[in-house]
Image 1 (cartoon, rainbow, N blue to C red):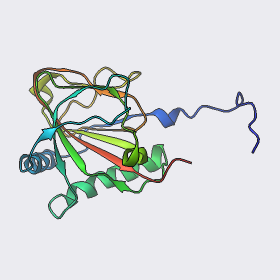
Image 2 (cartoon, rainbow, N blue to C red):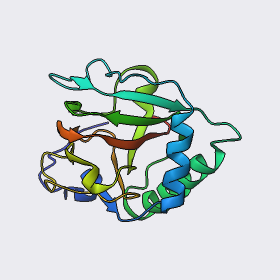
Image 3 (tube, rainbow, N blue to C red):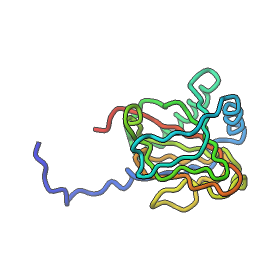
Length: 191
């Protein structure tokens, strides 16, 4: 294969687009997710090695494995992702990793990072966050992107979907606590 001058190529701006979907989940669905999370043991939120220059995370997470009790949530996320992926990115997708429910108390944060990494994390294509807290239940704690709006997806049930290679962070929570679903959609290696 011969590589040629790339100056004539048109940038694919849609590739680095994040989408905010207001009220993607109904209040009763959010309540069901919180009940599922409440029944799980919390653990300290981890960081993917090499996912960011100074990745620091202060949160707790609860894992929701795919089973009879959580199948509706996996199906709901898959339907949402399938529709939006077909309209925007057209990535080859294969399935969802185990779903995480994250709790960021006052002082909780997750510095700038990407959701890609070694091993299984190298297959991540799209990341999904669903707001579980009421907008006024906490201060700070915004999901942020370097070139994105300062504040998005603050209403209960709002979702944000973005390519897993995009830098993002959860700004420090200054008061209250922020709850969210975090899911990663995987697929075959990029080609």
